Amino acid sequence: GESVGLHLPTLSVQEGDNSIINCAYSNSASDYFIWYKQESGKGPQFIIDIRSNMDKRQGQRVTVLLNKTVKHLSLQIAATQPGDSAVYFCAENYSGNTPLVFGKGTRLSVIA
Amino acid sequence: DAGVIQSPRHEVTEMGQEVTLRCKPISGHNSLFWYRQTMMRGLELLIYFNNNVPIDDSGMPEDRFSAKMPNASFSTLKIQPSEPRDSAVYFCASTEHANTEAFFGQGTRLTVV
Image 1 (cartoon, each protein chain N blue to C red):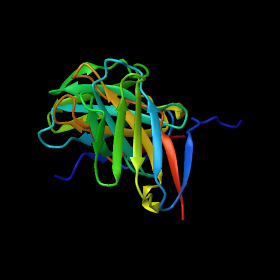
Image 2 (cartoon, chains in turn cyan, blue; image 1 turned 90 degrees about the vertical axis):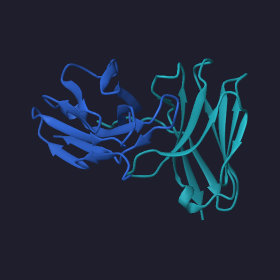
Image 3 (tube, rainbow over the protein chains, first blue to last red; image 1 turned 180 degrees about the vertical axis):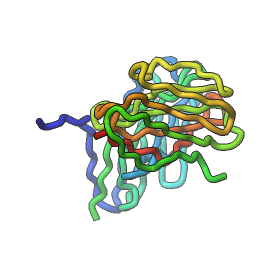
Image 4 (cartoon, each protein chain N blue to C red; image 1 turned 60 degrees about the vertical axis):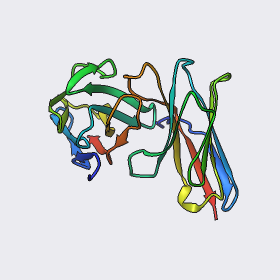
């Protein structure tokens, strides 16, 4: 029979446009958050992180925004490139010594 | 450092056989994690170790799964006997400290036929 897979939200963006990927996290006690990028056939790769005492952090072409009030995390990618096509995961951590808890992921598709 | 190293990259085995997946964490990292990724359930934590000691194995699906970390530079995940539903990509990750980023290996794609 037909297998039912995990339905990943998909974001399609024109090359050169900005991308915004959103994530709702589950635990109000979480104090550390990470965005990972996973390309086909590879393991997740760190993009950027943020701690709960901040609400914004910028890297090279990427910005992470944290809204603790509504437990929301976003990743903004400026001038999206074909190489940005991948699945993006947010991850949260709480109680310091516990493993990261991953969200379900969003697939970013860049249209050249 | 070469990063987290997993072997083999691909494994095809028959149902009922024993499978052993291997992981070498980044040198100096104190925590090691085994994750499983499937289309159905995404990325799931199976077990993690702090300073070579298993801390939480509640994610291990059943008794057929076991993991060991005999020293700071090596861990194994064993499935015995393997079943077709174990087919997935298994990732190992390590962190230097609590509350820091986890570095992932390239994964082992397991197919049980």
